[in-house]
Image 1 (tube, rainbow, N blue to C red):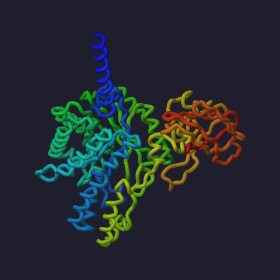
Image 2: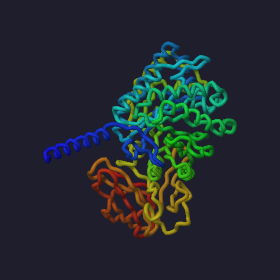
Image 3: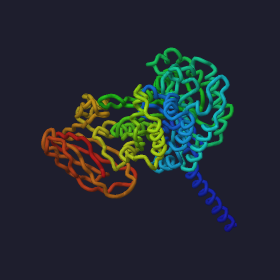
Image 4: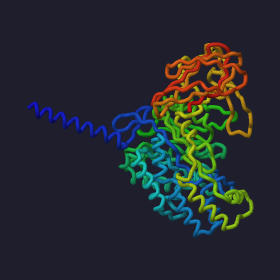
Length: 546
Protein backbone atom coordinates (compact mmCIF):
# COMPACT_ATOMS: atom_id res chain seq x y z
CA UNK A 1 0.00 0.00 0.00
CA UNK A 2 2.78 2.38 0.88
CA UNK A 3 4.62 1.71 -2.39
CA UNK A 4 1.38 2.10 -4.33
CA UNK A 5 0.61 5.37 -2.54
CA UNK A 6 4.07 6.72 -3.21
CA UNK A 7 3.80 5.67 -6.86
CA UNK A 8 0.44 7.43 -7.23
CA UNK A 9 1.84 10.56 -5.62
CA UNK A 10 4.81 10.52 -8.00
CA UNK A 11 2.50 10.08 -11.00
CA UNK A 12 0.27 12.92 -9.79
CA UNK A 13 3.29 15.15 -9.20
CA UNK A 14 4.54 14.30 -12.67
CA UNK A 15 1.21 15.23 -14.25
CA UNK A 16 1.14 18.47 -12.25
CA UNK A 17 4.67 19.33 -13.40
CA UNK A 18 3.75 18.59 -17.02
CA UNK A 19 0.62 20.74 -16.69
CA UNK A 20 2.71 23.60 -15.29
CA UNK A 21 5.20 23.29 -18.15
CA UNK A 22 2.40 23.23 -20.71
CA UNK A 23 0.90 26.40 -19.21
CA UNK A 24 4.26 28.13 -19.55
CA UNK A 25 4.87 26.86 -23.10
CA UNK A 26 1.38 27.16 -24.57
CA UNK A 27 -0.89 30.15 -24.87
CA UNK A 28 -4.40 29.71 -23.55
CA UNK A 29 -7.63 31.55 -24.27
CA UNK A 30 -7.89 34.92 -22.57
CA UNK A 31 -10.99 36.17 -20.83
CA UNK A 32 -12.04 39.30 -19.02
CA UNK A 33 -12.48 39.08 -15.24
CA UNK A 34 -13.70 42.36 -13.84
CA UNK A 35 -11.02 44.90 -14.76
CA UNK A 36 -8.37 42.27 -15.53
CA UNK A 37 -7.57 40.01 -18.45
CA UNK A 38 -6.81 36.45 -17.34
CA UNK A 39 -5.83 33.17 -18.98
CA UNK A 40 -7.56 29.82 -18.51
CA UNK A 41 -5.57 29.16 -15.33
CA UNK A 42 -6.82 32.41 -13.81
CA UNK A 43 -3.42 34.14 -14.12
CA UNK A 44 -3.53 37.84 -14.99
CA UNK A 45 -2.12 38.69 -18.42
CA UNK A 46 -0.88 42.21 -19.12
CA UNK A 47 -0.95 42.76 -22.88
CA UNK A 48 2.17 44.65 -23.91
CA UNK A 49 2.59 44.65 -27.66
CA UNK A 50 3.30 46.35 -30.95
CA UNK A 51 1.08 47.29 -33.88
CA UNK A 52 1.87 45.76 -37.26
CA UNK A 53 0.90 48.84 -39.23
CA UNK A 54 1.71 49.46 -42.91
CA UNK A 55 1.80 45.75 -43.72
CA UNK A 56 -1.72 44.72 -44.73
CA UNK A 57 -2.90 48.33 -44.88
CA UNK A 58 -0.14 50.64 -46.17
CA UNK A 59 -0.34 54.19 -44.83
CA UNK A 60 0.90 57.10 -46.91
CA UNK A 61 2.68 58.91 -44.09
CA UNK A 62 4.85 55.82 -43.50
CA UNK A 63 5.86 56.00 -47.17
CA UNK A 64 6.54 59.74 -46.84
CA UNK A 65 3.93 60.31 -49.55
CA UNK A 66 1.68 63.29 -50.17
CA UNK A 67 -2.05 63.56 -50.89
CA UNK A 68 -1.85 61.48 -54.08
CA UNK A 69 -0.53 58.56 -52.02
CA UNK A 70 -2.18 58.98 -48.63
CA UNK A 71 -3.99 55.59 -48.47
CA UNK A 72 -3.62 52.06 -49.86
CA UNK A 73 -5.66 52.46 -53.04
CA UNK A 74 -3.79 55.65 -53.93
CA UNK A 75 -0.40 54.14 -53.13
CA UNK A 76 -1.32 51.22 -55.37
CA UNK A 77 -2.19 53.64 -58.16
CA UNK A 78 1.16 55.42 -57.77
CA UNK A 79 3.06 52.14 -58.05
CA UNK A 80 1.05 51.04 -61.08
CA UNK A 81 1.45 54.43 -62.76
CA UNK A 82 5.22 54.26 -62.36
CA UNK A 83 6.06 50.63 -63.18
CA UNK A 84 2.91 49.20 -64.81
CA UNK A 85 0.16 46.97 -63.51
CA UNK A 86 1.92 43.64 -63.99
CA UNK A 87 5.08 44.66 -62.15
CA UNK A 88 2.97 46.42 -59.53
CA UNK A 89 1.09 43.18 -58.79
CA UNK A 90 4.42 41.38 -58.34
CA UNK A 91 5.66 44.19 -56.12
CA UNK A 92 2.68 44.02 -53.77
CA UNK A 93 2.86 40.26 -53.40
CA UNK A 94 6.55 40.51 -52.47
CA UNK A 95 5.92 43.53 -50.22
CA UNK A 96 3.39 41.67 -48.10
CA UNK A 97 5.63 38.59 -47.95
CA UNK A 98 8.66 40.60 -46.82
CA UNK A 99 7.26 43.33 -44.59
CA UNK A 100 6.31 41.07 -41.67
CA UNK A 101 7.93 37.65 -41.52
CA UNK A 102 8.64 35.08 -38.85
CA UNK A 103 11.92 36.94 -38.20
CA UNK A 104 9.91 40.00 -37.12
CA UNK A 105 7.72 37.93 -34.82
CA UNK A 106 10.72 36.16 -33.31
CA UNK A 107 12.37 39.51 -32.65
CA UNK A 108 9.24 41.03 -31.11
CA UNK A 109 9.10 38.12 -28.67
CA UNK A 110 12.85 38.30 -27.92
CA UNK A 111 12.55 41.97 -27.00
CA UNK A 112 9.92 41.22 -24.35
CA UNK A 113 6.61 42.04 -25.99
CA UNK A 114 3.79 39.51 -25.68
CA UNK A 115 1.31 40.54 -28.37
CA UNK A 116 0.83 42.06 -31.81
CA UNK A 117 -2.03 43.99 -33.37
CA UNK A 118 -2.13 43.51 -37.17
CA UNK A 119 -4.04 46.24 -39.00
CA UNK A 120 -6.28 44.65 -41.63
CA UNK A 121 -7.65 46.21 -44.79
CA UNK A 122 -10.92 44.48 -45.65
CA UNK A 123 -10.09 44.92 -49.35
CA UNK A 124 -7.26 42.41 -48.97
CA UNK A 125 -9.79 39.84 -47.70
CA UNK A 126 -12.93 40.79 -49.64
CA UNK A 127 -13.19 42.31 -53.10
CA UNK A 128 -15.18 45.47 -53.74
CA UNK A 129 -18.15 45.75 -56.08
CA UNK A 130 -21.69 44.44 -56.19
CA UNK A 131 -20.72 40.78 -55.89
CA UNK A 132 -17.71 40.69 -53.55
CA UNK A 133 -15.74 37.47 -53.15
CA UNK A 134 -13.17 36.50 -50.54
CA UNK A 135 -9.49 36.97 -51.35
CA UNK A 136 -7.34 34.01 -50.38
CA UNK A 137 -4.08 35.98 -50.06
CA UNK A 138 -5.26 37.98 -47.07
CA UNK A 139 -6.33 34.91 -45.13
CA UNK A 140 -3.07 33.12 -45.98
CA UNK A 141 -1.04 36.04 -44.64
CA UNK A 142 -3.11 36.15 -41.45
CA UNK A 143 -2.77 32.37 -41.07
CA UNK A 144 1.01 32.67 -41.36
CA UNK A 145 1.10 35.44 -38.77
CA UNK A 146 -0.92 33.42 -36.27
CA UNK A 147 1.24 30.33 -36.87
CA UNK A 148 4.40 32.35 -36.16
CA UNK A 149 2.86 33.96 -33.10
CA UNK A 150 1.76 30.59 -31.77
CA UNK A 151 5.32 29.32 -32.16
CA UNK A 152 6.87 32.36 -30.45
CA UNK A 153 4.19 32.75 -27.76
CA UNK A 154 2.67 36.05 -28.84
CA UNK A 155 -1.02 36.88 -28.65
CA UNK A 156 -2.75 38.41 -31.68
CA UNK A 157 -5.40 41.13 -31.52
CA UNK A 158 -7.00 41.22 -34.98
CA UNK A 159 -7.72 44.85 -35.90
CA UNK A 160 -10.23 45.81 -38.61
CA UNK A 161 -8.37 48.95 -39.64
CA UNK A 162 -10.17 49.47 -42.94
CA UNK A 163 -13.77 48.24 -43.01
CA UNK A 164 -15.83 47.83 -46.20
CA UNK A 165 -16.85 51.31 -47.36
CA UNK A 166 -14.68 52.96 -44.72
CA UNK A 167 -15.58 53.82 -41.11
CA UNK A 168 -13.94 57.23 -40.75
CA UNK A 169 -14.44 59.35 -43.85
CA UNK A 170 -10.68 59.91 -43.85
CA UNK A 171 -7.65 58.30 -45.45
CA UNK A 172 -6.61 55.89 -42.69
CA UNK A 173 -9.27 53.29 -43.53
CA UNK A 174 -8.63 53.30 -47.30
CA UNK A 175 -11.92 55.16 -47.79
CA UNK A 176 -12.69 55.49 -51.52
CA UNK A 177 -14.69 58.70 -51.24
CA UNK A 178 -13.71 60.32 -47.93
CA UNK A 179 -17.06 59.53 -46.37
CA UNK A 180 -17.86 56.74 -43.87
CA UNK A 181 -19.90 54.63 -46.29
CA UNK A 182 -19.95 51.75 -43.81
CA UNK A 183 -22.55 53.74 -41.87
CA UNK A 184 -24.37 55.01 -44.95
CA UNK A 185 -24.99 51.83 -46.95
CA UNK A 186 -26.28 48.68 -45.32
CA UNK A 187 -24.48 46.48 -47.84
CA UNK A 188 -21.14 47.46 -46.31
CA UNK A 189 -22.37 46.58 -42.84
CA UNK A 190 -23.51 43.21 -44.16
CA UNK A 191 -20.08 42.68 -45.71
CA UNK A 192 -18.34 43.58 -42.46
CA UNK A 193 -20.53 41.17 -40.50
CA UNK A 194 -19.85 38.37 -42.99
CA UNK A 195 -16.11 39.04 -42.91
CA UNK A 196 -15.93 39.00 -39.12
CA UNK A 197 -17.99 35.80 -39.02
CA UNK A 198 -15.57 34.18 -41.46
CA UNK A 199 -12.57 35.29 -39.39
CA UNK A 200 -14.20 34.07 -36.17
CA UNK A 201 -15.07 30.73 -37.76
CA UNK A 202 -11.45 30.24 -38.83
CA UNK A 203 -9.97 31.04 -35.43
CA UNK A 204 -12.70 30.08 -32.97
CA UNK A 205 -10.51 27.26 -31.59
CA UNK A 206 -7.21 29.19 -31.70
CA UNK A 207 -6.08 30.58 -28.31
CA UNK A 208 -3.22 32.51 -29.93
CA UNK A 209 -5.87 34.99 -31.04
CA UNK A 210 -6.54 37.13 -27.98
CA UNK A 211 -9.32 39.36 -29.24
CA UNK A 212 -11.26 40.77 -32.15
CA UNK A 213 -10.91 44.56 -32.55
CA UNK A 214 -14.16 45.16 -34.43
CA UNK A 215 -13.53 48.63 -35.85
CA UNK A 216 -10.51 50.92 -35.71
CA UNK A 217 -11.00 54.61 -34.86
CA UNK A 218 -14.53 55.07 -36.21
CA UNK A 219 -16.30 58.35 -36.94
CA UNK A 220 -14.01 61.29 -36.11
CA UNK A 221 -15.61 64.55 -35.06
CA UNK A 222 -13.45 66.78 -37.27
CA UNK A 223 -14.86 65.34 -40.51
CA UNK A 224 -18.46 65.71 -39.34
CA UNK A 225 -18.88 61.93 -39.40
CA UNK A 226 -19.43 61.56 -35.67
CA UNK A 227 -22.31 64.01 -35.52
CA UNK A 228 -24.10 62.36 -38.44
CA UNK A 229 -23.60 58.67 -37.74
CA UNK A 230 -22.45 58.01 -34.16
CA UNK A 231 -25.92 56.76 -33.19
CA UNK A 232 -25.30 53.80 -35.51
CA UNK A 233 -22.04 52.69 -33.91
CA UNK A 234 -23.21 50.72 -30.87
CA UNK A 235 -26.02 48.99 -32.81
CA UNK A 236 -23.38 47.85 -35.31
CA UNK A 237 -21.14 46.62 -32.50
CA UNK A 238 -24.06 44.69 -31.02
CA UNK A 239 -24.91 43.12 -34.36
CA UNK A 240 -21.29 42.12 -35.02
CA UNK A 241 -20.91 40.65 -31.54
CA UNK A 242 -24.18 38.72 -31.75
CA UNK A 243 -23.19 37.14 -35.07
CA UNK A 244 -19.69 36.28 -33.86
CA UNK A 245 -21.09 34.72 -30.69
CA UNK A 246 -23.20 32.30 -32.71
CA UNK A 247 -20.00 30.48 -33.66
CA UNK A 248 -17.35 31.73 -31.22
CA UNK A 249 -18.10 32.17 -27.53
CA UNK A 250 -14.51 32.16 -26.28
CA UNK A 251 -12.63 35.09 -27.80
CA UNK A 252 -12.57 38.54 -26.26
CA UNK A 253 -13.98 41.46 -28.21
CA UNK A 254 -12.60 44.97 -27.90
CA UNK A 255 -14.66 48.06 -28.67
CA UNK A 256 -13.35 51.50 -29.64
CA UNK A 257 -15.17 54.76 -29.06
CA UNK A 258 -15.94 57.20 -31.84
CA UNK A 259 -13.65 60.15 -32.63
CA UNK A 260 -10.43 58.18 -33.19
CA UNK A 261 -11.42 55.60 -30.54
CA UNK A 262 -11.47 58.08 -27.66
CA UNK A 263 -15.05 59.22 -27.06
CA UNK A 264 -16.80 56.62 -24.91
CA UNK A 265 -19.98 58.59 -24.27
CA UNK A 266 -22.08 56.00 -26.15
CA UNK A 267 -21.00 53.11 -23.93
CA UNK A 268 -23.12 52.14 -20.94
CA UNK A 269 -23.57 48.62 -19.58
CA UNK A 270 -21.45 46.04 -21.49
CA UNK A 271 -23.64 43.93 -23.77
CA UNK A 272 -21.27 40.95 -23.70
CA UNK A 273 -19.49 39.21 -20.81
CA UNK A 274 -16.13 39.00 -22.59
CA UNK A 275 -15.63 42.53 -23.86
CA UNK A 276 -13.13 45.26 -23.04
CA UNK A 277 -12.91 48.88 -24.13
CA UNK A 278 -10.12 50.62 -25.97
CA UNK A 279 -8.74 54.11 -26.42
CA UNK A 280 -5.74 55.45 -28.37
CA UNK A 281 -3.13 57.63 -26.72
CA UNK A 282 -0.99 60.06 -28.68
CA UNK A 283 0.71 62.96 -26.89
CA UNK A 284 1.27 65.39 -29.76
CA UNK A 285 1.06 68.64 -27.78
CA UNK A 286 3.91 71.14 -28.05
CA UNK A 287 5.61 71.51 -25.66
CA UNK A 288 5.41 67.91 -24.48
CA UNK A 289 2.45 67.16 -22.26
CA UNK A 290 1.04 63.94 -20.85
CA UNK A 291 -2.63 63.56 -21.68
CA UNK A 292 -4.88 62.72 -18.77
CA UNK A 293 -6.43 59.25 -18.63
CA UNK A 294 -8.71 60.04 -15.69
CA UNK A 295 -11.84 59.86 -17.85
CA UNK A 296 -11.04 56.30 -18.91
CA UNK A 297 -10.24 55.20 -15.36
CA UNK A 298 -13.59 56.58 -14.23
CA UNK A 299 -15.44 54.81 -17.05
CA UNK A 300 -13.57 51.59 -16.30
CA UNK A 301 -14.98 51.60 -12.79
CA UNK A 302 -18.47 52.22 -14.16
CA UNK A 303 -18.22 49.53 -16.86
CA UNK A 304 -16.17 47.13 -14.71
CA UNK A 305 -14.21 45.79 -17.66
CA UNK A 306 -10.54 45.93 -18.65
CA UNK A 307 -9.26 48.96 -20.50
CA UNK A 308 -6.59 48.70 -23.19
CA UNK A 309 -4.68 51.17 -25.35
CA UNK A 310 -4.71 49.88 -28.91
CA UNK A 311 -2.28 52.51 -30.18
CA UNK A 312 0.33 54.74 -28.60
CA UNK A 313 3.60 56.10 -29.95
CA UNK A 314 4.63 58.44 -32.79
CA UNK A 315 6.59 60.71 -30.48
CA UNK A 316 9.88 60.40 -28.53
CA UNK A 317 11.53 58.43 -25.75
CA UNK A 318 10.51 60.74 -22.89
CA UNK A 319 6.83 60.33 -23.76
CA UNK A 320 7.23 56.60 -24.39
CA UNK A 321 8.77 56.01 -20.95
CA UNK A 322 6.14 58.06 -19.18
CA UNK A 323 3.30 56.50 -21.16
CA UNK A 324 4.27 52.95 -20.30
CA UNK A 325 4.74 53.81 -16.63
CA UNK A 326 1.37 55.55 -16.54
CA UNK A 327 -0.43 52.60 -18.14
CA UNK A 328 1.21 49.93 -16.02
CA UNK A 329 0.58 51.90 -12.82
CA UNK A 330 -3.10 51.88 -13.77
CA UNK A 331 -3.39 48.28 -15.02
CA UNK A 332 -3.81 49.27 -18.67
CA UNK A 333 -2.19 47.17 -21.39
CA UNK A 334 -1.00 48.75 -24.61
CA UNK A 335 0.17 48.23 -28.18
CA UNK A 336 2.93 50.51 -29.48
CA UNK A 337 2.36 51.96 -32.97
CA UNK A 338 4.07 50.99 -35.21
CA UNK A 339 6.70 48.26 -35.11
CA UNK A 340 8.66 49.81 -37.99
CA UNK A 341 8.43 52.50 -40.66
CA UNK A 342 10.66 54.28 -43.13
CA UNK A 343 13.55 56.60 -42.29
CA UNK A 344 12.73 57.30 -38.65
CA UNK A 345 14.32 57.22 -35.21
CA UNK A 346 11.22 56.86 -33.03
CA UNK A 347 10.19 53.26 -33.71
CA UNK A 348 11.96 50.04 -32.66
CA UNK A 349 13.00 49.45 -36.28
CA UNK A 350 13.55 51.84 -39.18
CA UNK A 351 13.43 50.98 -42.88
CA UNK A 352 16.20 52.56 -44.93
CA UNK A 353 14.89 54.93 -47.57
CA UNK A 354 15.72 53.67 -51.08
CA UNK A 355 17.78 55.72 -53.50
CA UNK A 356 15.52 57.87 -55.66
CA UNK A 357 12.65 57.65 -53.17
CA UNK A 358 12.35 61.41 -52.81
CA UNK A 359 11.47 61.64 -56.54
CA UNK A 360 8.60 59.20 -56.02
CA UNK A 361 7.44 61.04 -52.91
CA UNK A 362 7.50 64.34 -54.79
CA UNK A 363 5.35 62.79 -57.53
CA UNK A 364 2.66 62.15 -54.89
CA UNK A 365 2.71 65.90 -54.22
CA UNK A 366 1.98 66.78 -57.85
CA UNK A 367 5.66 66.78 -58.75
CA UNK A 368 7.26 65.51 -61.93
CA UNK A 369 6.78 61.86 -62.82
CA UNK A 370 10.06 59.98 -62.26
CA UNK A 371 11.56 57.73 -64.87
CA UNK A 372 10.16 54.18 -64.80
CA UNK A 373 13.64 52.65 -64.46
CA UNK A 374 14.46 54.82 -61.44
CA UNK A 375 11.07 54.03 -59.89
CA UNK A 376 11.38 50.28 -60.43
CA UNK A 377 14.85 50.28 -58.92
CA UNK A 378 13.57 52.15 -55.87
CA UNK A 379 10.63 49.79 -55.37
CA UNK A 380 12.90 46.75 -55.74
CA UNK A 381 15.27 48.23 -53.20
CA UNK A 382 12.36 48.80 -50.84
CA UNK A 383 11.49 45.10 -51.01
CA UNK A 384 14.93 44.32 -49.60
CA UNK A 385 15.01 47.21 -47.15
CA UNK A 386 11.77 46.21 -45.42
CA UNK A 387 13.23 42.88 -44.30
CA UNK A 388 14.05 43.15 -40.62
CA UNK A 389 17.59 41.95 -41.24
CA UNK A 390 18.17 45.09 -43.30
CA UNK A 391 16.46 47.53 -40.93
CA UNK A 392 18.10 49.72 -38.28
CA UNK A 393 17.31 48.81 -34.66
CA UNK A 394 16.93 51.55 -32.02
CA UNK A 395 17.61 50.05 -28.62
CA UNK A 396 16.87 53.36 -26.90
CA UNK A 397 13.33 53.41 -28.31
CA UNK A 398 12.63 49.82 -27.33
CA UNK A 399 14.04 50.34 -23.83
CA UNK A 400 11.96 53.48 -23.37
CA UNK A 401 8.80 51.59 -24.34
CA UNK A 402 9.66 48.81 -21.89
CA UNK A 403 11.11 51.14 -19.16
CA UNK A 404 14.43 49.38 -18.90
CA UNK A 405 18.11 50.19 -19.07
CA UNK A 406 20.48 51.00 -20.67
CA UNK A 407 18.54 54.23 -21.02
CA UNK A 408 18.48 57.96 -20.42
CA UNK A 409 15.65 58.55 -17.96
CA UNK A 410 14.23 62.06 -18.11
CA UNK A 411 13.85 63.75 -14.72
CA UNK A 412 10.17 64.51 -15.35
CA UNK A 413 9.48 60.76 -15.63
CA UNK A 414 9.42 59.96 -11.93
CA UNK A 415 6.86 57.31 -10.91
CA UNK A 416 3.08 57.52 -10.84
CA UNK A 417 2.41 56.28 -7.31
CA UNK A 418 1.72 59.77 -6.01
CA UNK A 419 2.75 61.98 -3.10
CA UNK A 420 5.07 60.44 -0.50
CA UNK A 421 5.56 57.38 -2.71
CA UNK A 422 6.92 58.63 -6.03
CA UNK A 423 7.70 62.17 -4.94
CA UNK A 424 7.78 64.57 -2.01
CA UNK A 425 7.61 68.37 -2.34
CA UNK A 426 6.99 71.05 0.24
CA UNK A 427 4.33 72.96 -1.70
CA UNK A 428 1.63 70.59 -2.96
CA UNK A 429 -0.76 73.36 -3.98
CA UNK A 430 1.46 74.82 -6.70
CA UNK A 431 1.06 72.52 -9.71
CA UNK A 432 3.53 72.19 -12.55
CA UNK A 433 2.88 74.42 -15.58
CA UNK A 434 4.23 71.79 -17.96
CA UNK A 435 3.99 68.09 -18.75
CA UNK A 436 2.34 66.66 -15.60
CA UNK A 437 0.07 69.56 -14.86
CA UNK A 438 -1.97 67.91 -12.11
CA UNK A 439 1.08 67.26 -9.91
CA UNK A 440 3.22 69.65 -7.82
CA UNK A 441 6.73 68.58 -8.86
CA UNK A 442 8.02 71.67 -10.64
CA UNK A 443 8.77 70.79 -14.26
CA UNK A 444 10.58 73.50 -16.19
CA UNK A 445 10.62 74.02 -19.94
CA UNK A 446 14.22 74.33 -21.17
CA UNK A 447 13.62 74.37 -24.93
CA UNK A 448 10.91 76.02 -27.02
CA UNK A 449 12.44 75.10 -30.39
CA UNK A 450 9.47 74.60 -32.71
CA UNK A 451 11.64 72.62 -35.11
CA UNK A 452 12.00 69.84 -32.55
CA UNK A 453 9.45 67.05 -32.38
CA UNK A 454 9.73 67.07 -28.58
CA UNK A 455 10.70 69.62 -25.94
CA UNK A 456 13.51 69.62 -23.39
CA UNK A 457 12.30 69.70 -19.79
CA UNK A 458 13.80 69.40 -16.33
CA UNK A 459 12.63 69.41 -12.71
CA UNK A 460 13.58 71.66 -9.79
CA UNK A 461 13.80 70.31 -6.25
CA UNK A 462 14.39 72.26 -3.06
CA UNK A 463 15.96 71.09 0.18
CA UNK A 464 14.31 67.87 1.51
CA UNK A 465 12.32 67.25 -1.69
CA UNK A 466 12.75 63.96 -3.55
CA UNK A 467 11.64 61.86 -6.51
CA UNK A 468 11.64 58.09 -7.14
CA UNK A 469 12.16 56.26 -10.44
CA UNK A 470 11.55 52.60 -11.21
CA UNK A 471 13.10 50.69 -14.07
CA UNK A 472 14.04 47.20 -15.18
CA UNK A 473 17.42 45.64 -15.92
CA UNK A 474 17.79 42.50 -18.00
CA UNK A 475 20.91 41.45 -16.11
CA UNK A 476 22.59 41.61 -12.72
CA UNK A 477 25.80 43.52 -13.28
CA UNK A 478 27.39 46.92 -12.78
CA UNK A 479 26.12 49.91 -14.75
CA UNK A 480 27.57 53.40 -14.82
CA UNK A 481 25.32 56.19 -13.52
CA UNK A 482 25.60 59.68 -15.02
CA UNK A 483 23.38 62.66 -14.22
CA UNK A 484 22.85 65.95 -16.02
CA UNK A 485 22.12 68.63 -13.47
CA UNK A 486 22.86 72.12 -12.21
CA UNK A 487 22.58 74.03 -8.94
CA UNK A 488 19.92 76.75 -9.02
CA UNK A 489 20.97 77.65 -5.49
CA UNK A 490 24.57 76.48 -5.11
CA UNK A 491 25.90 74.24 -3.92
CA UNK A 492 23.22 71.56 -4.23
CA UNK A 493 23.92 68.48 -2.18
CA UNK A 494 22.04 65.30 -3.08
CA UNK A 495 21.54 61.89 -1.63
CA UNK A 496 21.01 59.18 -4.24
CA UNK A 497 19.72 55.77 -3.18
CA UNK A 498 20.11 52.99 -5.75
CA UNK A 499 18.21 49.97 -4.45
CA UNK A 500 18.85 51.36 -0.94
CA UNK A 501 22.58 51.88 -1.54
CA UNK A 502 23.37 55.46 -0.53
CA UNK A 503 25.60 57.93 -2.40
CA UNK A 504 26.14 61.62 -1.62
CA UNK A 505 26.70 63.93 -4.60
CA UNK A 506 27.46 67.65 -4.82
CA UNK A 507 26.36 69.75 -7.80
CA UNK A 508 28.09 73.13 -7.93
CA UNK A 509 27.73 74.80 -11.35
CA UNK A 510 24.73 76.78 -12.51
CA UNK A 511 24.93 75.38 -16.04
CA UNK A 512 23.48 71.99 -16.85
CA UNK A 513 26.42 69.59 -17.07
CA UNK A 514 26.89 65.85 -17.14
CA UNK A 515 28.42 64.35 -14.01
CA UNK A 516 29.59 60.72 -13.68
CA UNK A 517 28.47 59.33 -10.33
CA UNK A 518 29.91 55.79 -10.33
CA UNK A 519 29.28 52.14 -11.13
CA UNK A 520 26.46 50.30 -9.37
CA UNK A 521 25.37 46.68 -9.41
CA UNK A 522 21.71 46.51 -10.34
CA UNK A 523 19.19 43.75 -9.83
CA UNK A 524 18.03 41.57 -12.66
CA UNK A 525 14.43 42.70 -12.93
CA UNK A 526 13.03 45.62 -10.93
CA UNK A 527 15.23 48.44 -9.65
CA UNK A 528 14.63 51.78 -7.93
CA UNK A 529 16.52 55.05 -7.66
CA UNK A 530 15.60 57.86 -5.26
CA UNK A 531 17.09 61.35 -5.54
CA UNK A 532 16.74 63.71 -2.58
CA UNK A 533 18.08 67.24 -2.12
CA UNK A 534 19.92 67.72 1.19
CA UNK A 535 20.72 71.40 0.67
CA UNK A 536 20.43 74.07 -2.01
CA UNK A 537 18.12 73.82 -5.03
CA UNK A 538 18.69 71.25 -7.76
CA UNK A 539 17.81 71.40 -11.44
CA UNK A 540 17.81 67.84 -12.77
CA UNK A 541 17.58 67.21 -16.50
CA UNK A 542 18.10 63.46 -16.73
CA UNK A 543 20.14 60.54 -15.47
CA UNK A 544 21.48 57.61 -17.43
CA UNK A 545 22.53 54.05 -16.74
CA UNK A 546 24.94 52.66 -19.34
